[in-house]
Amino acid sequence: MRFGGNFVDTTFWTSKGEAQPSWAVATLTPADLQRLKTLATNSGWQVVLGVNLKQHDPARAADEAKYAKQILGTSLKAIEIGNEPNYYPNYSMAQYYADFEAYRSAINAAAPGVGLVGPSDGRVPAADDWMKDFASRESGHVDIAGFYGHYYPACAKTTPKPTIADLLSISYRDGEKSRAQLTASLARSLGVPGVLGEGNSVSCEGMDGVSDVFAAALWGVDAQLLYAREGLKGFYMHSSIATCGAPKPLYKAYTPFCAPTDADAAAGNLRVRPVYYSSLLLQQLGSGAFAPVTNSDLTDVRAYALRSGTTLKLVLVNVTDPASHGPLATTIALGAAYTSGSQFQLTAPGLTAQTGILLGGHYVGKGGTFAGVQTTPVTVSGSTLNLDLPAGSATVVTLTP
Image 1 (cartoon, helix red, strand yellow):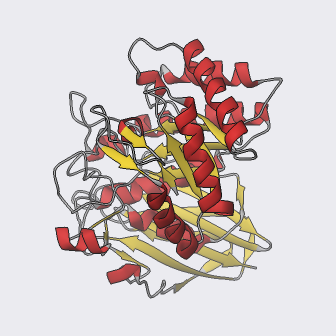
Image 2 (tube, rainbow, N blue to C red):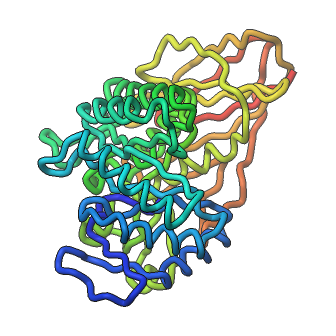
């Protein structure tokens, strides 16, 4: 779990009961970290905690890191310094690295052993230069726990506005692939994990009618598998906890979950949004190693193969619109003979659907309950598999010799 984003640089930390300054919109205290510890313990997930860089106070950030280490213990994975510094006004790459080093020194003294991650730059192409500069300065004396960047294929504030067709396009996908490859490559050069520490479908709080519909679930399946295949060790899907449809920026159209009412938000009662199903599908895959895939129809179908022992799993995402396309007859040359197989699918009434979404025949209920996937048999003829892929769907096939 990463706690970061734009609000990091407008949040004030104090362990001494100080008054909130005028630039801040919220105050964090050790009591908040105690609540975070409860969440981390109950979920079993570690925490990447962002600290304020824009107000430049290494001593205060070090104090926060000290308390985070004391309270979170092994649940603290790393500290992220600032958020997307390439967007800070009148701020250079050299200044960022100097500030990063000042924070590193203060945090190492106050909370020795706590890992730091960066450069946590934003989505624009110019951020590539920030990543390369940071990696170059780190080379030879690497002391970061991970090389982190952020990426969204689009921003909701651009003109023209991003559409569903854009989100599922090869153009957007090429941008995702390029940033993933760069992040993974620079991380390997430093000998640390490469992670997209923030991302989703459309930045700037998401795009209504794009980020909050079933198309985003199909995008999420493809994007997350693409990021993993290109060598990233993590992708943190950005989210928020707010009432569904509340004014932005508290509510974000791309969030995987939101609360039906204000009372639900206060009580922590959430319901899932369409993009949540993409991560749930990936969870069903388990572990495996990517196998090479030759795809002659990348525009319509995104295909992945994973091997685990003698088992082969295929993920086939048909991104065509069911409003104008029928099932796609697909022939897959498996490269080896298989005797049995099963499949389950991620489906919805259409790309714009917000309800009626099913994974393996089931939906996610209250409290995140999920009955699991129901599979159906598929007929495999030796080393060839023929499938009809429904438009606007993701299909997972498991094959055994």
